[in-house]
Image (cartoon, rainbow, N blue to C red; front, side, top):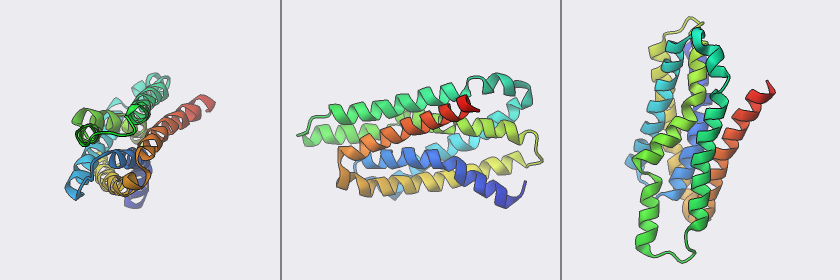
Length: 193
């Protein structure tokens, strides 16, 4: 597989992470460049590991995984997205500075980042299964996918940071709805195939 093809694959797989990172950036308290790359690294690491896992599973388990991978992706994405929406809607309109700071800090907690990164990387596992039947340097492919996703997700955080003050809680709701939408898209694509 050519470098150009792997690059396109990397950008394609990073789209979900970008959407999730956009919501994370909007919900966070003015993340700086270092924080954006920390978030990007979560998404990049999961996105890099997922194809390797899929590749290792190979075609032997493809039928078993294909039967339910879309449900897992949907459940994780809808759960994380739904939680984002509920948290944004439940927060009081007039929030104290301390409460606002705590809520914004939770948006970038390691557990929430890991769950979002896991949810957005499930499709990359399926891609890894497909890569098992191609001639590809899987380590190079995973490194490239991870690097692209890291940069794209960091950009999403920074764009979300800009949108957050303009949109307020609406940005968090939109980020959550985007994750739910991605989950629905994955589910519909698999169920209609």
